Image 1 (cartoon, rainbow, N blue to C red):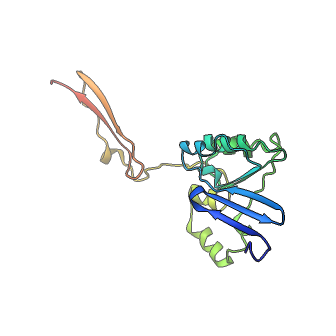
Image 2: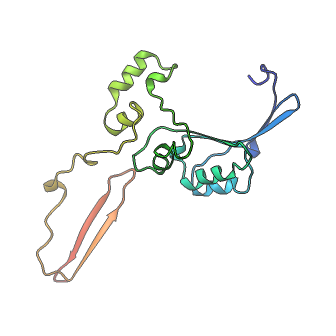
Image 3: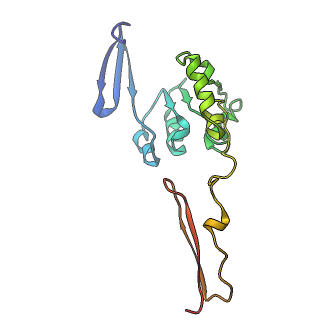
Amino acid sequence: LLGELGFRWEEKVSKGELKIRCGRRENTYYLFGGKDEGSAALIQGITLAGVLLDEVALMPRSFVEQACARCSVAGAKLWFSCNPAGPGHWFYREWICKAEERNALHLRFLMEDNPSLAPETRARYERAFQGAFYRRFVLGEWTAAEGRIYDFYAPGEYAQEAPAEPWERLRVSVDYGTVNPTSMGLWALKDG
């Protein structure tokens, strides 16, 4: 497409670099990801005239702030796009809620604004999802998950009363689950 528009370009995949030329003008674009805390080191010290951070809500704050700090060329522009997350998310609190204070333009798009989605597809999405996922990805709201996370939990089935006192020692064990459910145990030592 660039060639058809009269541009010359050169991509250096190993460097994550794209140079685009038209006439005497040349711009260099750096392509990098902000997947973890160490990603900020990828751009530390660089001078940028702008950044486009796609799905910024998935990036660590340290990376985003480093990218913004690197935009030191006069007239530098910051562009962000993302799907909503929870209302306590740092990007929502620091950029969306403070858009006017930061002199930022906040545009909110919904699924109905996506011209590539057929009406039938959009209707299917609207019917298929519920809860926080529906509110975030269909309605475009920065909302928290509500209700019980483990809706199957029945105290009589999954928990027992603690043994009667006196105990010699108590311990709590926690196995935080991300793929599997979280498991917690109260361990009491009594009579050895």
